[in-house]
Image (cartoon, rainbow, N blue to C red):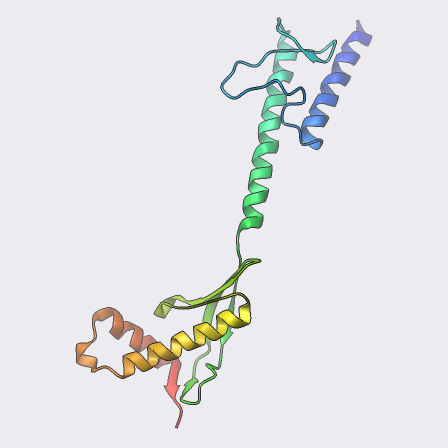
Length: 177
């Protein structure tokens, strides 16, 4: 009796080990979504229809739950590695002969394997490029163009958003003399 119980335990442990460490969600390949699972007959390690003891039923349920956890962990792993790498940096020079940065500008950098995005959300300016360097250059150009555009307009004709943007730009950037 004890030997038979050990065999059942060993087979169950092997199945759980395969599910957890082997990456198999259904070791026997029999489970189908939205289908009542057929039961594990632990003395032969095959899935066969039939009755199960409470312990066998609990192990069977646990096996499927572990398989779900493995599946979810794989999905989360893939999602995490598909996300862009998000960092921040400061810009202290726009590369312009006309403008100088008086307060370093904190920008958000989002990088993936394919592209980089650098943005200054306070003024809705951004640069997108194949590399971080390229994205920074596009952002600097966007900031320079925004300064030139807002400074060329009559302040009385600017809307609320444009006035707010111009005020922020004026705090960080001045004309070189």
